[in-house]
Image (cartoon, rainbow, N blue to C red; front, side, top):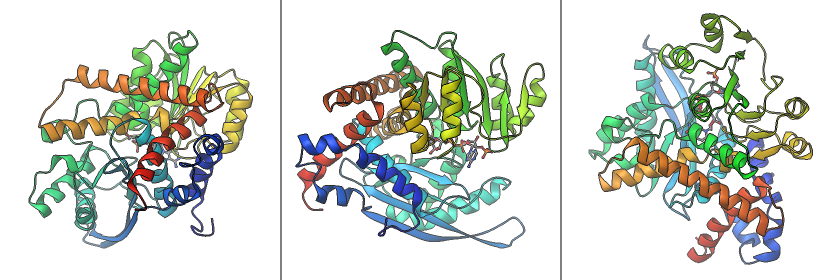
Length: 434
Ligand code: NDP
């Protein structure tokens, strides 16, 4: 804490991992060694830079850019870029730290990183977003490369932003290096299923949980927070598997639609028109109603999927979910559940799946995009989705087997933290003091 003052989210993320490593100290003192842990908590490299750009009226604007290259023990640095006014070093470090273990859990050869800016794309024109992305990449490009560091999207960074970033990288380096960014469009090096992957992967993971106890999504009521990339594709997959999503949200409030969210309408409002969930409720009519409040957890459901942002599900929300009979909470967002809420859910017997495991499908499919780029190949939707489902199945197995082996059967938090840690610590020990 003294070494990283004021970085609250980073402290929270580190504490959660370290708290789970007790059983590893007993079994593998060589890996849970203080020196390895100390290095693991210190990023290999942190880049903070000025991003000057001009708005549509020609006025100069200034933002701050970040890239935290946390660990390359398992492969090139890999992790998304977030553009949101709340971004500061503590957020980027928490996300980068989480990413190390998530990427390790996928079993793929990718290290951990994260980046972004306090730039707010909301209300900005395409031309402004392009100028910002070009300025951001003008500094960042010297640190990237398909074998070095491969960013992707995150909150506020979708295909439009990845396009502008990739265009500027290509121009500055005079290289069509497709593998340097993931989340690209299909005509310029992207992978099928990448856009859908985090939301789909989350629902595949919950499906594994339900099946492990002989259940399924069929007829279950689901609440999803957020209405961005992860949320929309989680809603789509829940509906495909026979469940019914009855509520979703944005930062202004939530919509309850007991007939089931109309995904076509939601996508039209959010993706085509960049509108709000209140517009959805108004246009949907019937039983749909908008509630101008936050968060969403008072809506009774069987499964809750927090897919918006960090610390959005606190103790009060957890109490409401457990009290209303919710059986599973699985994190689509990164660290959306506070430590107190996690404790409460587990004490109440609610199965809890942490984001490190449950939302790993996005980065896993990014690694599949890198594989296709390296082979100059493109896979079909069905083949790529099958690979994603297979990866989520193996992440689920790894969590359960590790939890069992280390004395906490059925505990997905312990399984994810220990399972992710072991692979990266083993590589760090082998690579020596670097
Ligand atoms: P988007 O920007 O597409 O959507 C974010 C959604 O969450 C929006 O509905 C937004 O509402 C809402 N939201 C964001 N911040 C806040 C806030 N402070 N308070 C209330 N609502 C908020 O992001 P993604 O769907 O890509 O990402 C969502 C989460 O999933 C993040 O935690 C991200 O790190 C994580 N994640 C994303 C992956 C991906 O592949 N995209 C991969 C793994 C994890 P509004 O529009 O009103 O701001």
